[in-house]
Image: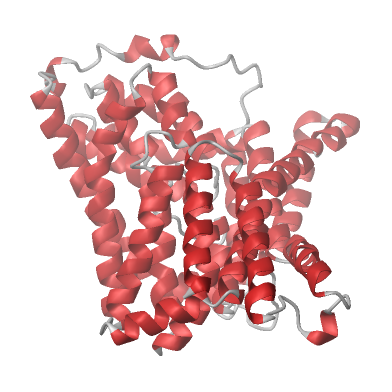
Length: 463
């Protein structure tokens, strides 16, 4: 009982500190350390097996953190860093914008149907998120490209912002950090996770969200007195007033649209799906794609030094991702280890079993925890990285496969972030369009809740 009280107090303190703006990584690590210390004092539980021990149970706590940093930096962390580095490099050379331009050309045929136009912009944004994995980065890019188009067909500012803000809501594909993290926890290849588990749920969620966007945005526009047909072509000049820093980079050639797609093609080609005799992991695909891109850049610029120097964008992106994401993974694992060491997980699972909780109900509880955490913290990564590590043990004790819990949790983390008015991408997009992030959150809440419900239902019913 004492262990549960301590775990509850520490968890409440951690949540309170995060909500007050304390650095989440530091708070999670501190909470994990406190729990591991309590576990040693109460139960004599040590965080490391005998063969990895330093010889001191107290130093083992910090050795656990060292080991976690080491394993994550060389494994999952390296994947996430390489993905981010490549995405930033694509942005810097203009390849991302070329891809957006290519994908939006067919939209001209449905300009007379503004809300269908908006729904298709959402689908295009989601497709782009497979290659451009930063929610804020993709959001700002779409504000430059898709936002003026949506305004030109008569949509209000908030209606044009809503599909852009939710463009990375359904996190799918091997380029997403949460997707790689989920596959790593389950212990399967990320391509297998995407193909065998993600696609069905993602398709259902995308369909529901797109339809809800059409209904919700049109209803709210009418409620606000905005009739799209009366505003067609009146907002095209607004692109000039967007609050964006001037981009002085030269426009990339149209052929650059293929560059962001190369990693995905490589990952799926060299897998069990196509060429099974050769395997290529995500990190290798990013480096191969970078090498191909450098060749394109040399042909375009003809300046070897400038091309070589530009690779720093890739390395800077890797570094930022280490600081922002990899540290979150380590912090989440440290906190999870603390909860396990003190026996909180066993107690919770046993209590759930005695209360008659079925695996489905336990899954819904975990999903709700992720949802509330993501909304309050404004980060899907923070929520998922903090609690996903608990799933294998909980699922094992409940007698179900970890993927049954992890799949809906992973999808819900991304969608819940877009309900939060303090999420970085929501704030950035609202700032560009000069609207309130709280008003924007009202426009995204119903589509996201619909996506959350359908993703949980399809996950539970299918797996």
